[in-house]
Image (cartoon, rainbow, N blue to C red; front, side, top):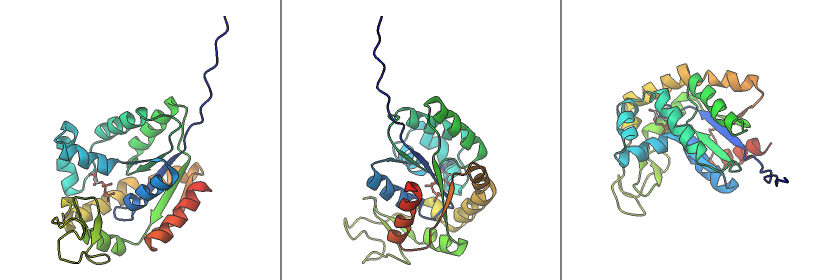
Length: 225
Ligand code: ADP
C-alpha cells in the first residue's frame, strides 16, 4: 500500500546566548527574537512568571533566586524540556539563561537530539565586571515591562514609571549581596561552558559594552554568519 511521505519540515535554528548576569542577554534576546521571528526563551523570566502565578515551580525556585544561587538542575531541565517539546520543530529558538551548568548543557543536547535538532550557534556576550555591577545595581523595573537604569536611563520622577505612573520595582536578586553571588556562580559554574562550545566550533564572541543598537547589530551578524 502506498503511503504518503510526511512533508519534510526544516528544523529551526537553536541559538544559545551565554554571558554574565547584567550583560544584556534579556534586552538583546527579546529584540533578536522579534526581528528574526524566533522564540525567546528566558529561564529567568519563566521562573519569575511561575513565582507571580504562585505555581509550585516558582515557590521551589524562590529561595535560590533571591540569594543569587542556581535553581537545581532537575527543575530547570524539566522546565526547558517541556517548553521545547511544546514548540514546533521549525520554530527558531533563542535560549537566554539556559544552559548554566554542564548537566544542563548535556540535557539540552539530549532534548534537542530527540527532535533531530542541535545547538547551531552560541554567542558569548562579554563586558567587564565593574560595568555589569553598575548595570545590575541600577536596574529598576516597571510593572509594564519597561526597564530603567538609575545611572544610564533614569525615569523623570525618581522611582516612578514615565509611562504608567506606577512605582518601579527593584528585583530582590539585583541587591549587592545577591549580585556578588550571581557573578561568582557565573564565573565558577557557567563560564566553563564556553570551552565546551568552543571545542565544537559553535562559539562567537560579541562585545556587550556598546550602545544597545550596536550590540544588536553585532549579535544579528553573529547569529546569521
Ligand atoms: P541574570 O542572568 O541576570 O542573573 P536571570 O533572570 O537570567 O538573571 O536569572 C535569575 C535567576 O533565576 C538566577 O540567578 C537563578 O537563580 C535562576 N535561573 C535562571 N536560569 C537558570 C538556570 N538555567 N539554572 C538555574 N537557575 C536559573
